[in-house]
Amino acid sequence: MEIIDGKALAKKIRSELKEEVEELKKQDVHPKLAVIMVGDDKASAVYVRNKSKACNEIGIEYEEFLRDSSITQERLINLIKGLNEREDIHGILLQSPIPDGLDIREAFNTIDYRKDVDGFNPINVGKLSIGEDCFVSCTPYGVVKMLEEYNIPTEGKRAVIVGRSNIVGKPLIQCLLNKNATVTVCHSRTKNIEEITREADILVAALGKPKFITADMVKDGAVVIDVGINRNEEGKLVGDVDFENVSKKASYITPVPGGVGPMTIAMLMYNVVKAAKLLK
Ligand code: NAP
Image 1: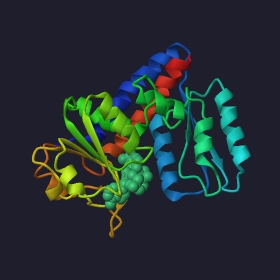
Image 2 (image 1 turned 60 degrees about the horizontal axis):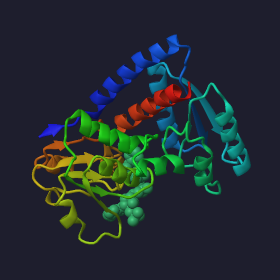
Image 3 (image 1 turned 90 degrees about the vertical axis):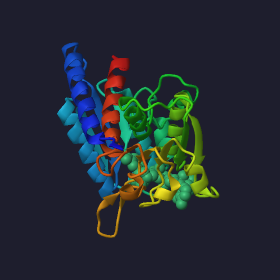
């Protein structure tokens, strides 16, 4: 069994991006990310801080737009439209969640698809589904990058994804399909889920339930990717997979923390650099 080291891989990607950004700066292209955060969600504040740290490390410029939860939908949309117009900004990210009463879908739809580094705009979602070059949502992109870097074949393999959210499960279906896997997706209404997960050569858990995937749900030699980030009773970060027992059966497995999480931020940085190159 091999542990997929997302932390080390993300570090390598960040260091390659740093060199690329230095080259772009010589051509007077200064990649820049704008991050909008509405309200004071504590977890979001941590995510936003991590994104700004990653930008700093790589040399990507960063501007934060913190707005009170009393912001109106109209003002939020106007803020995004203003950022769409700004030539110095290449990537726009709206941190979710945003407070109730605001329409996040309209906000995502307003972000210019060429600056949509989170890949949530329907144009990018549509392009992904027909296999065109686009911005791919960062977490599924990170999962695919891990498989590629570890030379784990996908073609003809049976991939099972547990979770069908718009940000993880659904785009991952498309990513794995584009890589010629045979993809099955499970969700909260799926019956006899363990019979399906046991068929997986590649099993991705993205449901947000601590230790949901137990050893009896996994085929011997399966590749297990744990997207989940949960806190257990002791406040410790745990994934959706019972790592201790599943790792005894898996051929490859990602840990939590240190697996998919760091890859998500690395792929965001990748998307910002890509946007800067496309917009230059
Ligand atoms: P989400 O929007 O809550 O979606 C959860 C999905 O799991 C839904 O499709 C739901 O099915 C399904 N589900 C829930 N309970 C289930 C059950 N008992 N059996 C089968 N399916 C079940 O969550 P998300 O945003 O995709 O996030 C999932 C997890 O990944 C969370 O722990 C989150 O913190 C983590 N995450 C990590 C990263 C990272 O960078 N590593 C990034 C994003 C999210 P229905 O559709 O039927 O409700």
